[in-house]
Amino acid sequence: DQQVKQNSPSLSVQEGRISILNCDYTNSMFDYFLWYKKYPAEGPTFLISISSIKDKNEDGRFTVFLNKSAKHLSLHIVPSQPGDSAVYFCAASVSGSEKLVFGKGTKLTVNP
Amino acid sequence: DAGVIQSPRHEVTEMGQEVTLRCKPISGHNSLFWYRQTMMRGLELLIYFNNNVPIDDSGMPEDRFSAKMPNASFSTLKIQPSEPRDSAVYFCASSSLTDTQYFGPGTRLTVL
Image 1 (cartoon, rainbow over the protein chains, first blue to last red):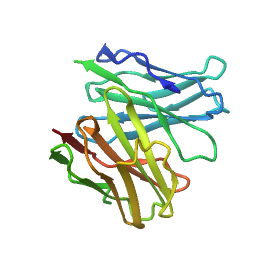
Image 2 (tube, chains in turn green, cyan):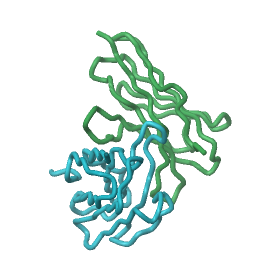
Image 3 (spheres, rainbow over the protein chains, first blue to last red):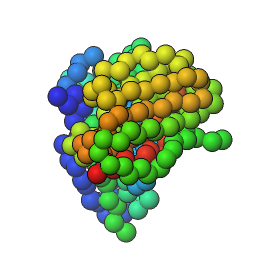
Image 4 (cartoon, one colour):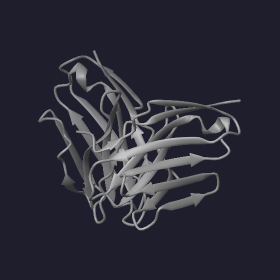
């Protein structure tokens, strides 16, 4: 039973365009959400997070949007760069717990 | 600063053999996590420790899996006996109370 779902296994975009990665969750107790990025042969690295008290968090080219009513979040990368090509994992947690629940990941390819 | 260190990076073994994966967390971090990544299930939490004490082992698949953290700078994940379905990439991550999780590079395990 996947509590965090990334329904697109892969996404391909052109350099300079926007990349939008989506994530859905089923557990209404989740109130903290994170995105991790993973390059081949490396561990995931933290990218950006958002608390449920917000609906948007921005960090440079990366913006995460949270729609609590739809139990949906998305990661926008603008403009996309070839170096952004990686697998992106969405993760969720409940306040007070260190436990993260991850989605299966979306492989992003940014073409030059 | 050294990140999370995992060894070995690759392990190939035969079914029935014992496998031990090792992890050294980031100095000063008091939480340690073991994850397994497979194509079918994505990135799933197996067990985590806080101040060397196991807090949640609900993700450990079966009794063949065990994990220990004898001190703040070392943890092991043991599989005995190993089976082909245990083939996966195993990640260790660590964090401090107010920080995100930092992942090691992973151990790719192949059980023949």
